[in-house]
Amino acid sequence: MKFINSLGFASLFAFSLLLGSCTNLQEEIVDGVVPEAGSVDVQSLLDDAYRTLWQFQVQDNIWSLQEHSSDEIMGPTRGTDWDDNGVWRTLHDHTWDAEHTFNRNSFNSMGRGLYLANNVLAYNPSQDQEMAARFLRAFYMYIFVDHWGQVPTREPGSNIALTDPTVMSSSDATNYIISELETILPNLPDNTDAWVASKDAARALLAKMYLNKGVWTGDRANPSFSAADMDKVIQACDGIIDSGNYEVDDDYYDNFRPNNDMVSSELIFTSKNDGGVQGGEVRAHWHMTLHYNQKPSGWNGFCTIADFYDRFDDPNDVRFDAEPADLTPVSGLHAGFLIGQQYDENGTALNDRRGNPLSFTKEVSIFETGNNLEVTGIRGIKYIPDFVNIDRSDNDYVLFRYSDILLMKAEAIARGGTATGGDTPASLVNEIRGKRGVATNSTGSLEEIYNERGFELWWEGYRRQDQIRFGTFLDAWTDKSADDATRLLFPIPSIELSANPNLKQNPGY
Image 1 (tube, rainbow, N blue to C red):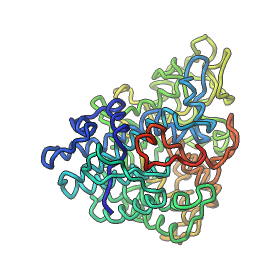
Image 2 (image 1 turned 180 degrees about the horizontal axis):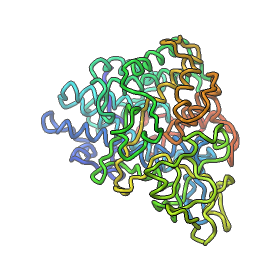
Image 3 (image 1 turned 120 degrees about the vertical axis):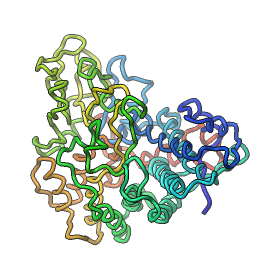
Image 4 (image 1 turned 45 degrees about the vertical axis):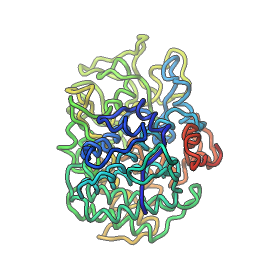
């Protein structure tokens, strides 16, 4: 099959306004002019495709679709703060529509990454460049399948001004991505820097594809999971496990520190940041939740909800609460979930801006008013702030890591796959639990695996996908009613429908 350039004139014009570009290619694309081979710096084009991964680091757009639509995060309107025309509320209560700003921006930014990765293939790349571009193309297609169930496509180097993109269905795109990953895997480099496409990154994505294949090629509301697909998940995971290149970190927060690329033994694929030089907005992952009077000063926004918080089953779980030596003595902050009175690094109790005790409450509403609106909601700190480079932080953003691989293998066995290497769902889950300071008492049931994924991977961008696969995404939780299968997909943005007649609106919108 020949492929792919994503999107059309309207979207790429929007990219030029929204994201800009690090090369002159953006102007040339928007004009519909395809440069001749040899006139493009292929590596720069590939680097731009990698840079689009920075979009996962910000607090809005694609991350907000992944997390605010789930039971892990709420973005309350706090008096006059955080209203933003309801963009956070409608994600939380599942009332978004085709005009939703973050949905449109996400469709555009993921399409830009897809376009750039695919366009590398039009300009005689080296084999290494081609393999990396094809992996990134598959990755961005995976995001389209998961969120919108359709993938706009073009042949590499095609003139965007003359033809509308064709569109692949969720089922066709899923099968294509799997085939493409299996084709390129032998020619990708072995374990290397985690921000570079590698065999293990492809295996991790293959495991994701096969684990969710029953969702994306069938009935999303009532998926089936074939034993054959689960065996493929296990095979992909075993390729990573058997390499000996990874282990569950003794210190959970090594995965999220400013120097995580140096100290973590779990990182498989990341979005690279170079502290003080360039990178995405990973700082958003502490600013978005911390109060203005904490260190570092935050934006007093997002919190988790009691429905999710109360799932944690052991107060000794470091994922729930910890006092890292590079965080608590420096700022007074704990890592994990912040509840109750907050303190500075000297042990002095903090107040909010009204002079009330800064004591975070479990109770929270999507609309907050009154005297306590700055303290409602349990806050989360996962990425350890980079106090040296606070505005251009060094923490690489994690996309795939080893603990997720163990949990995917556990789930695949529990769903009927063939156990290998003496592993059982219980042993795989307990391997992680033992490193997190909690009792190794999991029986490996699907419910326990689901809960463990929440404990281990909270706020990492997988909760919506997990909830859909486990059948809980349409349930009710705090300030969100039960809803119907319409919400298992996001709508195609209205501007895209008008620009490309081959796109069809998803049912119910």
